[in-house]
Image (cartoon, rainbow, N blue to C red; front, side, top):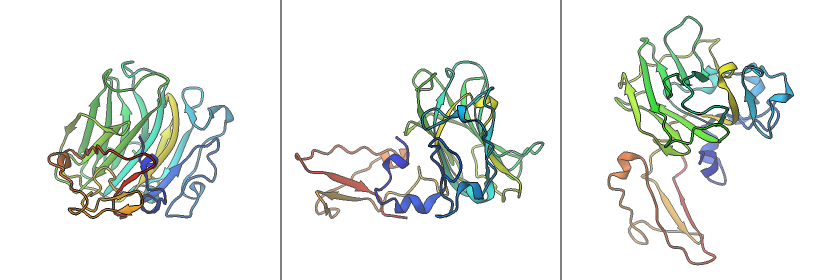
Length: 276
């Protein structure tokens, strides 16, 4: 369901794109990777001082456990294109008519050049990318019973953007599936470098749920090109147009492709993209 769940087993392509990965396996110190070798504690202050926030291999943030994880935006977030993905188990149903801030790097009193994700009081999941001209590029998903956004149920949330695209340049996926997004200020995002002290803040009082496996990538992994797709059958790489044919049709525009393949017993098929 998550990007890391379906990554190539050698992890090379995903590793090259990973800016930070918080596994949150009961301890926030010295977890994750930044540019391949630096520990999380090297790039941002971690405010986390109570062991009762740990539930299995996740972290609980609510009114009683109101700390935050702080990550240096300059190091971890690529404003040109990126993906943020995490597991979330809310302690509320989507229709509670309350606002829950999930993450933000907005500086206090500054209304431009920030990203933010919240479940708002209108019961929408909303991602903001306020650009350098203070234009708030919003993408919202109207949460309904069709989405598994309920008390005590784990979901994956994936946000991805490509600032240079002229329209529909932000996408929200829930449990690995595309959503029916609604856009405001649906246009190219005029980016600027993050400020020196501009941290990405995760958690806090209104988060009201459990966080696990938080990852930031420096590419839009939803829009990753698939023209270099390769298929292997029982360990042998197949040759396009000789061994198989692909007809994406409109699915390429929808960025959702399904494969239906019959496999003999004790055989396997591997479908992967060319490493980037």
